[in-house]
Image 1 (tube, rainbow, N blue to C red):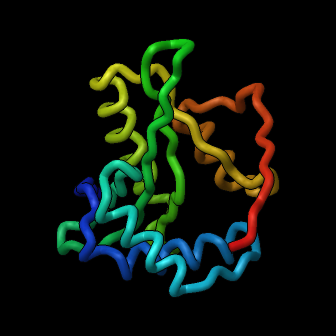
Image 2 (cartoon, helix red, strand yellow; image 1 turned 45 degrees about the vertical axis):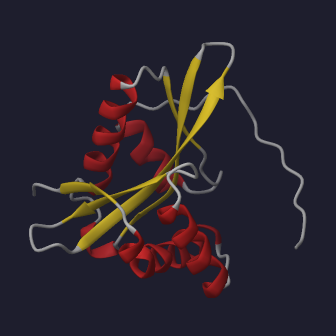
Amino acid sequence: MNWIIEKGTPKDTAVIAGFQLDMAEESEGTLLDPETVNKGVHAGLSDPSKGIYFLAKTADGTIAGSLFLTKEWSDWNNCSYWWIQSVYVRPDYRRMGVFSALYSEVRRQAQAEGSTCLRLYVDKTNEKAKECYRAQGMDECHYLMYEETFRH
C-alpha cells in the first residue's frame, strides 16, 4: 500500500491522543489520563518547537499510524539528534509498512537537515517493537536511560 505521510495539525488531536492511550496500555500496561494526554497532544500539535507529529494516511484519509519527532542539540557533533517518540500503528494496519513509511520520511528529512542520528527509546520488554526497529536498520546503542520522576 502507498502511504501518504503528512505532518499532523491540531485537528488530529483526538486521533493521536487515542493512539497514545492505546499504545501506553498495550505496550506497558499503563493507563494514562485521557484529559492530560489530549492536552499534551494538542500542545505538541500547536507548537512546532515542541516537536512534529508525522501521520501515515490511507488514500481515503484514514490515519493508520503516527509518530512524534523531537530534536536534541549535540554540542559534540554540532548538529541535532532526532528522537522518534510516541510511535503507534493501528492494529488493523500493522505489518503493512506503516512504520516503514513513517521512518523513511523522518530519516530522509533528518539527513536533508544534517542530522547525524535518529534515536528512540523502547520498553525493554517490547520485543515486537525492537524487532521492527532493527528491521529499519536501527541498532541498540550503548546508552542506558536514567530518570527522576516528579509528581505534579
